[in-house]
Structures are given as C-alpha cells and as structure tokens.
Image 1 (cartoon, rainbow, N blue to C red):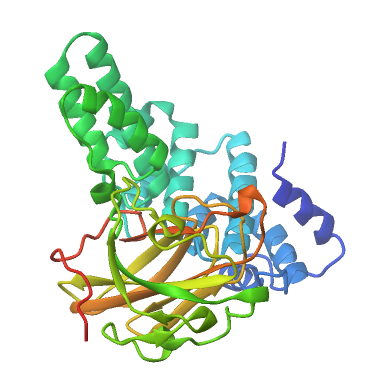
Image 2: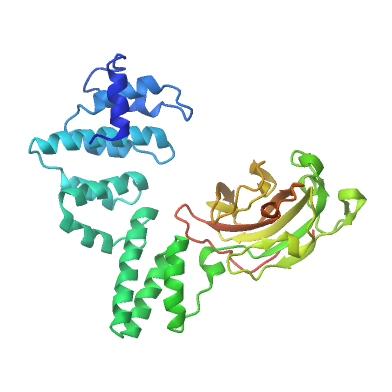
Length: 381
C-alpha cells in the first residue's frame, strides 16, 4: 500500500503542472522544501513530489541528503518520494545501493532523521545487517538509532542476569545507562541496576538544575501578569527588595530540590497562591561558548531568558507536564550564565489545576546532559 503522502501526491499531480522539468532534481527538491508550516506552497510541493517519485534509484542518496528534521512536512514529502522510488525500482529487480546507504548512515553529521530512514532501507533489503549496525550505535547522535542500541544492551543484560551472571549484567546495564536518553529506558535500567548495588542519580544523569533562587508572588489575577515586566525582568538584582502581589515586600530565597527528576514544587516552597507569578533563577557555568537546549517541563504559563535575552514563552495553563515538554535552543557563554524563568499560575480551583511546578535541564540536541562546569548557585549582585 502506498503511503498517505504519496496518495495525496497522486491526487494533486493530475491537477497541477510540474514546477520543473522531469529530471531536474535540485529544482524539484527546492520546490518541496519551500512548503511552509501552514501548508503555503503545498500544491507546488506535491507536484514536485510526484515528479521526484518518477526518479531512478540514483536519486535516493540526493533525496536523503535533502531531508532536514527542522522541516517536518517537507521531509515527510521527500521520504514519500523515496519510498515510491524504492518500491518501484526494487519490484523491477533493481538492487538498492547498500554500500552508499551504509556510508550515508555512518556519517553522523548527516540529518538524524535521514540516517534513520537510510537504516530502515538497509535493513529492509538486508535484514542480516541490522545487528552489526545497531551494535555500534550506543553513542549515536540519532536518538532513534541510539534507542535501538540501548534496547539491545538492556536485552543482553537481562539475559545475563537470568543466567546469574551478575557482574556481566551489571556491566551491560551500566553501558546501557550511559547511552540511554529516553526516560522509559532509564527507568527500565534503574531497577535492576540498583538491585545489583549500583545507585542511579537521575538528576545528574538527565542534567536537571536543582539549585534555584525564587521570588514571588507577583500579581496574575485574571491572567493579566503574563505580559507585565515585573522587577526581575527589568533589573535582576538578587539582593534587592521589590514589591509583589497585594503590596507584599519580596526578597529572593534559595531553594534546592531533592526531587530525583529535578521538580521544584512552588506550592510547597512558597504557598498555594492563586492568580500569581513566581520567578526562578539559576546559575549555569560553561567551560566554552556553545549552543545548548534548555528543556523545560511545567503545567503553567511560562517565559524563559538566558543572560537577559528573552528566548521563548507560552501562555497556556494546565495542559499537563512531562519530561522535555518544551525544547528551547540557547547560546551560553564561557563562564557564568544566568537562566531566568517566569512561572504563572491562574485562579482555577479544580483539583487538577493546582500544580504549580517546573523541572529544567541543560543538554545537547540528543538529550545528553551538559553538566555545569562546577557546582554553583546565583550569588547576590
């Protein structure tokens, strides 16, 4: 059965004129990648995909190279074209260029989504290649490929444990933990590893920031405070006293969470305020200038700054909370960086609307923790 994407292509292809001559691969790819997030340019993109689907097997590698995980819709279209090419050409008895696909897969700077697709094509044509390829991917930058490699280690550890080979099982579980980035896999490793006498520090493994300075509450009655720039947003002075909600005099207070997933519960640390805002600040020390991902989980409306630069925010309340719920790219400098988070609670009284909390970690794009260069907390300045 043809993929949904290709079904749509065939629907549109009859009604539109191809945007480029058949065989003009770069122009066809350009038309596909011009499609917007809201579907702008969709008709032209679908017409181009219809032409791409007619290409020979030699087009597979260039199309894989064109896939970009940041362009999800365009990448789906390109994948659909590749699937159509492969299905047609292999049905005609032609062989996939496995050596070229493996070379593409081995180049870890290629797009992770494209590499995962290349892996699927290889395994589809040569199932015996799966095991040796996966064995070398425990530290792969593709989260999906790494996940399969970790699962392989977990299975091997469980087999060793069942055979009473505890030292071997422990070693395999340790290898799996070092490579694991997904919460479910870390939890699957944690229990048997701790039963084997190895304590697992989840906060350290995931890179949660656990030491914060907090100040609040500020006014958020009728949800009016989200756009208001209260004192911490304008002048970040940790030794200053500022006016908060209902005229309260507020000062920054230190807090270190003991939660294994780095959760700071503001209802417990401060009070169960309604229609309120709290600011949280943490210091992050980096050895070099670099790009990181700030990954946040919270059920509350929020805004984020790094070194005074506003990065992102979301005015949405009580949509739930999960690990890595929001991923925000940021640049940190060598030395001390200050992360500021604004957390807004509304006035809903339902039981499910009472959570006022957050967890935040610093990592790279694979979810690998980037721990601070030294244990530090924001000092008054």
